[in-house]
Amino acid sequence: MSINPDNFGISLAALLKIGHNITVLYVEDDPLIRQEFTHFLNRFFFKVDTAANGKEGLKSALDYEYDLIISDIEMPYMNGLDMIEKIKEQKPRQATLLVSAHHEITMMQRSIEIGVDGYLFKPILPHQTIELLYKVVSHIEQEKENVRYKVHLEKLIEAKSQKLLQLYTIDRISGLYTRGKFEEDLLSRSDVSLALFKINDFKSLNDFYGYEIGDSIIRRCADFLRERFSILDNADLYRISGSHFALLTPMPSDDLEQFAIVTNHIFENQQIKIESEFIHLQMAIAIVPHNEAVSLSKGDIALREAQRTGKVVVYRQDPIKDLLRSKKLKYKEEIKRALRENRFVPFYQPIIDNTTKKIIKYEALARLILPDGKIITPEHFLNISKETKTYGQISHMVIKKAMDDFKDSECNVSINLSIDDIKNSFTQKFLFAQIEAFPEPKRLVFELLESEGIDSYEELGLFLNRLKHYGCRIAIDDFGSGYSNFEHLAKLNIDYIKIDGSLIMDIESGILSQTIVELITSFAKKMEIKTIAEFVSNRSIESMIDSFEVNESQGYLFGQPVPYDLSMRFIQSL
Image (cartoon, helix red, strand yellow):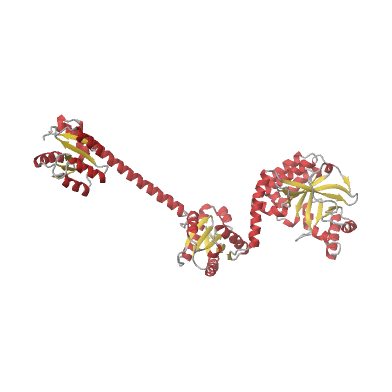
């Protein structure tokens, strides 16, 4: 079969270009035709194998992967259609061409049914053959390209998946397992104890030296822990947050506790060089034994205790503590809801002038009102609000309501301020804005909790001077408790001393309490500071308070804290 390139144009050139990597099986029983057509096919294709009948062709097709199978129909042992049908049963995407001397309709129908890709009719003409081969081979090449592209995509996806998996399981800074991996392992391992390690005061180091040094410290601590725990069997080490590491190990909890104590001793006695100086780091360690249903929340409970005590703490279930924690969690949620629903309100307790026996002032006391109407006092929610960073919002709510209630009153109103309020610039700004909007700032008294301690008289003095500038007055609350000293009075230029209630409650029979109260009132007179007695609960205490010439009194004898009432607009006699 001779070929003149000028007679075939683009089909021949294209077939020569794409046929160089195509493999062909040609099945023909006539040896002369097989030889001639094989010679023709070899001009275009990388490899051309032959078979003399359908049975041989089927075996070759199943033993070897051919891109294209070209077969005669009429052959001994097995005809071409039967052969192709059996091939398609195992290789449904196999490309095939049939060669026939007949144009039988039944043959054409069956070849369509089994998925033959094209037909050559004898005598085979070069032009038709090249056109058909080009068409079929182009399709084969496109299929190959699709397969190659699919494989390429799968490799890309696999590489991306591996990278994502590594990011998910390996911490970038420490090289330890991540929290995600920790949570997976914790769920799948029931035989392990948990140990938590946290570098104390790491945030301060990070803030002072910067994140680059902070990351370096994390790496050094991770290296120390990795080396230390490398001797343990089946132990896995994780970095689960900033300076927070975790260990899962089947080691018995008693052995793990001793191991942790030694580890902590070694760690805290090592020096770490930061820039040009050497520092010692401290680490809190907590353990949750495997028989305590290991969880990260239990580890955190023990870790907080370890940070507070400076010891390695092993978690032990305690029903009483669990109940307290449960109540604490309940109040955390209740505080958030109450802020949204405006359920923090001031209750007011009267303060009387001990000379005129008239109610001249009210102290605003924060209360939380539950949805069922139950009234909750600050000892149940105050510390929790500070932990949850909601204390400032509660202060704002109570301050605003107290000033709104008493803006048109003859009486003074006394509002408590903590050191947290004073140090919070946002609260200061809010407070001064409220004072400026209040009609008579001279009727405002702000009580400072003396028992909280004052670490900067300069900072506090600036704040109090500004209050004084508006005409407000200042009281020190709970004076006489804790480590009180009269130096406070001289430095703060205050207007009132509220004598601690524990002294007043004991004043009837307590000689020491009587002496302290007498000393406080005597000093206050000389300093021209007025005194207020808290917790005056009966006439006997009232009589003794009067004998010490205390200026004002507050307590259940005169009234319990109650919600605002219109009667509070006026100074009243008892």
